[in-house]
Length: 292
Image (cartoon, rainbow, N blue to C red; front, side, top):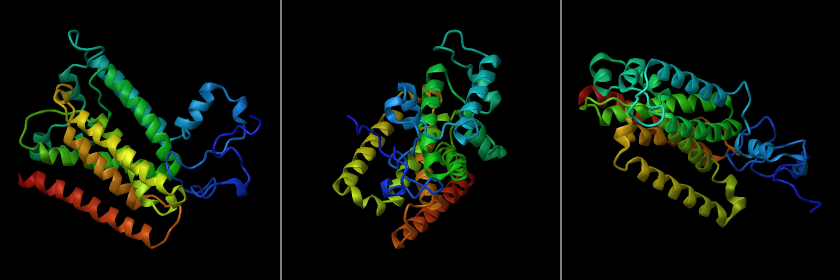
């Protein structure tokens, strides 16, 4: 028990693993070590959770800014109107529409593209709000820790807005309104997947475990998509196609923007793949919105 430690507890350069190039370099989400000066035996349970789940949870971080924005917008929605006969702290649909719920018809006919941004911070009720806060905190903190604040901000916002455009293209003939806070989660999941693909060569040290890891992650994503596409998502104004678009956009953008642990021919090909398919996704969505 004297040697009890967590991966990355040692700060000596010779003890660092191959998934980390030092404190100022880019890493792999959920895999790269987190260097701590406090021995794990002296940590409290909540300190351990913060270190493992929220490594970049600091006051001046993009993740905290996203959470703060979600909290403020939800509070404004509640002040604007609560549905007394709905679920716990359910916001009135008219309040969501006034504040910025996405309408494919408005984007197509009146060019209200700002709705692709505003709708990212809207939540239907308290349950959805708490779920979004939790997953944005966990995924956002790990992605920001791995690829840096600027790259994480670009991928999260641009990828989520692109996902909303993809959903608008699919739903352009409907009169529905959508709130897209869940698109933030799918975009961050796509970014995590993109990091694994971008650093596939660096993961060779895991041997067969890297294939098992990727299969497990893809199975989790498939089950998540099945829940998203299940009947009833429309009742909470969730655009399932925007979630799918956010997943793809986050994946492509992370492949294109993030700095890999090692940079060889494979990583350059992945970056070219990421830029190419993200551009196709974005332009196709924009063009098809106007054509259909």
